[in-house]
View 1 (cartoon, rainbow, N blue to C red):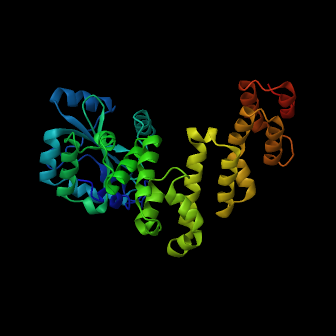
View 2: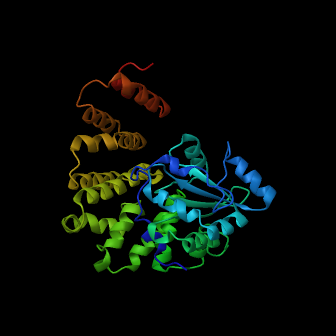
View 3: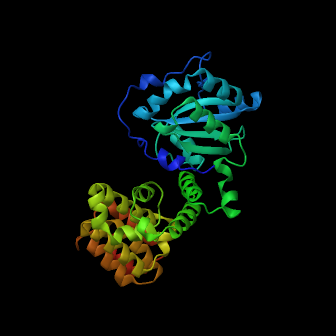
Length: 350
């Protein structure tokens, strides 16, 4: 059930794929393959699904994704069309358009790469979400995706129940963690991928699949895989593109800082994160800038006004705060009811 399908699918291109003609995504004929509908608003898909007692299938694609283009002839196959048209109202969603991004945000869906296949019931509840890689680009692959979406025990909407029932198989754990990330559920993502890492012998931490997991799934700099990478950067740089190693580690640190739990990090923890950024070669000025707002909020919470002032002075090199930034800091300080002496540090607020 939980083979390494999803991890393999992560190898497909990100949303900014290789440029291809957007004309390739024109609606396909209704008498051949999947009948992708044309509607003015997405809600019309669900209205139609209710009338026809069907579910809704949405292919999230990008006009610049060559993997998406490669799926077009597969969706046009008769056997694929027969299965999808019998069970779904289908639609192609262009992730480059703002109105569709708004729909995905409303549903708390993050499209990590394209194509991603989304299956909903007629009431707009997400049943199943899965990336579609080159290795699944076949009639059998697409029909299997749809069959999984229609199976209450196997679709991704049931992953939480499967996890809570005690499934700790490694393949399930990283699939669940990746699904949680696509659903913007950081808590479940961290729990599942931390459990996965704890099951592995440390000798496997640095292998290719776990570096891929670091790139695509890990969002927490306390994860054992991340800590291992930071302690073995030279080894990772020798085995992988150093730019990708740096980007991967940097992203995980920033995910952690900007998460809701980041506001609660201790000063010791913040210093550890800054030290890791230095280890990656990030310039000190950039590090100060990335932490400025978080540090100021932290020091305000700790009532350490001297450190608030020190942070601002370091950020602006001891110079006056530019007018473009002043309004932000004034609003922040007013919202925190800081002392008049600290407000005076900003100068004149409107």
